[in-house]
Image (cartoon, helix red, strand yellow):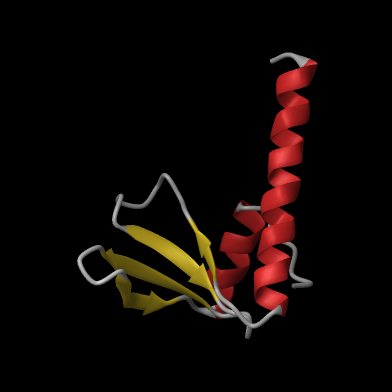
Length: 87
């Protein structure tokens, strides 16, 4: 990849990180998408530090909780996605 593409990726990653921190510090949840999940699933990180795996319900613009991640699973997910724990 060229330096320009790498620079753009860095800027994009920083912007997403800033948005995450902004949402969590203002008391709102943050959605984490993963290509390893089915297209109707994602993780939602909450201001209290918990993370839940959810299934999106498109007809209701809502979601249903599949499971709350354990502390170990939460830490592994944060490590995998390079999410700062100081949100």
